[in-house]
Length: 172
Ligand SMILES: [Cu+2]
Image (cartoon, rainbow, N blue to C red; front, side):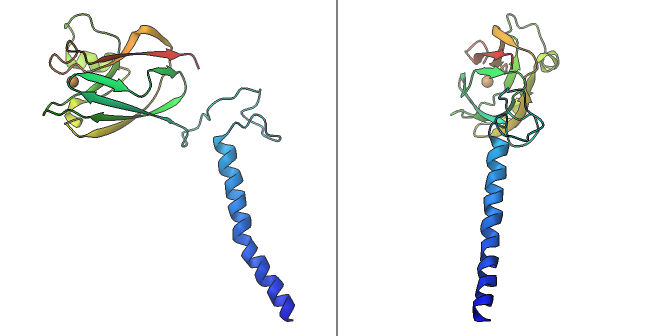
C-alpha cells in the first residue's frame, strides 16, 4: 500500500517533466530546419528555408537615424524573408527623421505624397521624434541590385546631407 502510493506520486511528478520535454522538442523543431526530419510532409524537397508562416521567424534589423546619417544592422536582404525593422531616431538635436525604403532620388521634383507611393515602406517623421523608436514588418518581393533601393530620409535637406544607405535584395 505504502509503496503503491509512492509509485503513483512518482509518476505524477514525472508528468511535468514529460510535458516540458515535449514542449522543448516542439520549439526546437519549429525554429530549426525541418527538411531532415522524418515524417514531415511539408517543407521537404531538401530546401532549407525560413518558415513561411507569420510566426516568430522574422529577422530583426536595427536602423538608427542620426544627424545626418542612416545606419542599418543589415544592408543585404533576401526576398520572401520576413524582416522586423526596429527604427530609432537617435538625434542629439530636436530633429525628426524618417525612414524610407525607395529608389535613390536625383532631383527634388517629387512631393511627399508621391514619395510615399514610390516607397516600398516607410516610417513617417511624425512618429520619429528624437528618442522615439518605431517598428515595421516587411518582406521584400522583388530583388534589387546595388543602386536600386536605399534607406533614406527626405526631411528638409537631410538626404543631401547624407541620410542615405544603399541596400541590396537578393532572390530568396
Ligand atoms: Cu532626417
